[in-house]
Image (tube, rainbow, N blue to C red; front, side, top):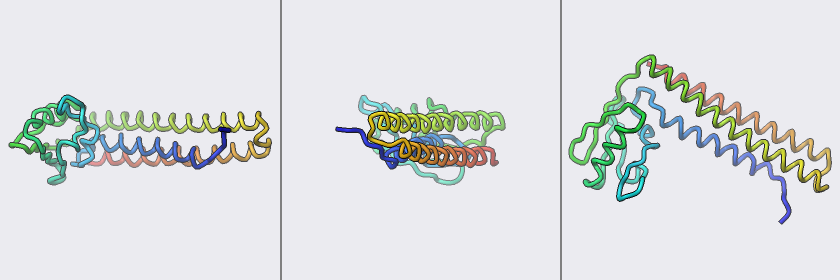
Length: 186
């Protein structure tokens, strides 16, 4: 099957990098209770690592408290352990099959650490977008070399790929700016 150039495929792959960044950002603690705070936690349940949302329901009782209702009593200890061991600095309080998780206010030092971590996540997303750009540019060069695309078409498509790349890098920068502001709010 001959290779073909499709800008939508490139855009979709770049959108995937942004979706991944949003998921990573949702796991960063900002001092307020968010049900997405625990999304990245896996629980050793039934002998396999399982996402926390598959063994319990998470809700925000108020701005400073999360509530985790575990469905199976035999997994409560594993959920408690997974939350404590996660690098979020949370200490759940077990109450039967429900875990209450107070969200302590963040210190200035911890806020700066979280900002750095957010910056690292954003840089990883930028690298992913640039890798997709590189793949697209290499495909254009291969198609041009195989005489399946003229030089003018190749230049136009290269410009299109660069525009899409610039748009996605700008989105990543905006997401980082928003997350940094959210982290630094008291």
